[in-house]
Amino acid sequence: MRFVWQWITLERELPPNWSDVRLVLKVREQDADRAAALLGGANPLRSGNSLRLFVSRTGGFGPEALRRALLRLDRQGIAGTLELAGVTEAEAATAAVAATLVAQWDAGLATLPSDWSDMLAEVVLRSSDHLERAALLTAPMNPTRPGKRLALQFRVARCFGYGVSAEMARRCLERLDEEGIGGELTILRVLCDTDAVATQGPVWRVGRRAV
Image 1: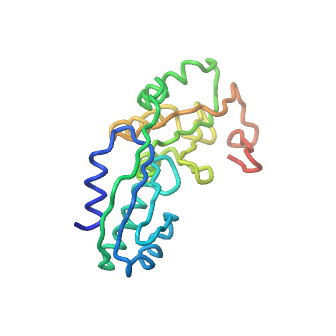
Image 2: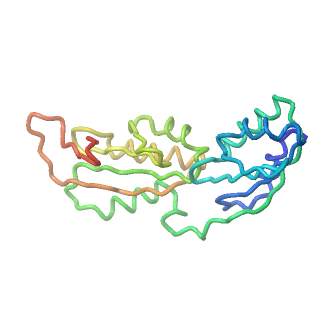
Image 3: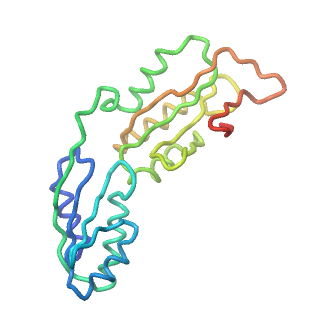
């Protein structure tokens, strides 16, 4: 069986809340060097003809990267076995994480002063597999990615200025919920009763960068 299909079979048997897995990939001795080179991005640990891999759902080398790497082996005609060496399950989700993004949004707004005007918020995704799709679904919010974190930051302007409207932000989060893309929403910064004077609104500077 091809490596990609071996992984698909293993992945289906993993607990739904798995956070990372350890895998052992075994190939023929003569293929070990080539297999290690093709799996370079995974930083495999080699012992003879065995390669140990670490896959994480929350960052680093994720499931999608693993599938691409295994596909390279399959295309090169490298055969072998893929075995599960260990799995780590995430801790029980807190109520905030388990809640839908829309529910988190509504709860966050309820804590704000009645005269709030500008907001900087972010959604931390649970899986790197969801990053591209989440960015597409939230495109109206013009999200940005802070560094290499699995997060999308966005601005909200209640009445005028930089940022999406609160109603559109809620609708974008609703789209993520509809496709089962989970995460944790955090309101990072809030301004109240701002008044634009010869500008389009306030600008925050975070880490020497305007947001």
